[in-house]
Amino acid sequence: MFIIGNLFIALATVLNYVLQLYMYVIIIRAILSWINPDPYNPIVRFLYNITDPVLYAIRRRLPVFFGGIDFSPWVVVLAILFLQKFLVPSLLEMGMRVGR
Image 1 (tube, helix red, strand yellow):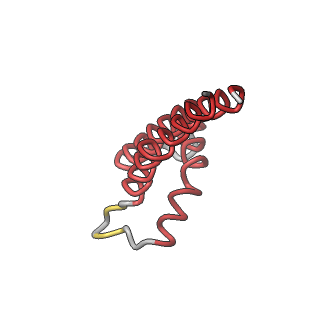
Image 2 (cartoon, one colour):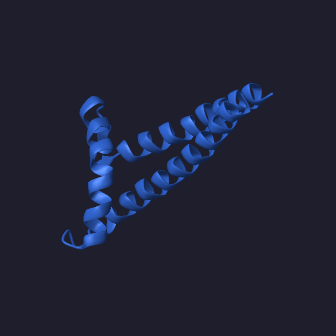
Image 3 (tube, one colour):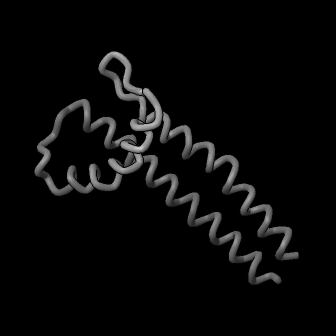
């Protein structure tokens, strides 16, 4: 059973790193929207390609665009923080309990 416990611990660790990285990408995307970079730049296109599906889904479901300000990155960052504070520790605890 310790193998399954280690699997949960590893999954929680990797999930935490992925969520943290995606949060940074969302923040960078929000900052880039203020400076209006070249849309043909490969880095900008990559950032838009990995963030647009999530941001579009939030924009479609919630009216988070008030007065010219797009709040969908804030909603995504809050969701990521919730997952980091709820799901990751839950997976770690489950891994610790199964590993005993």
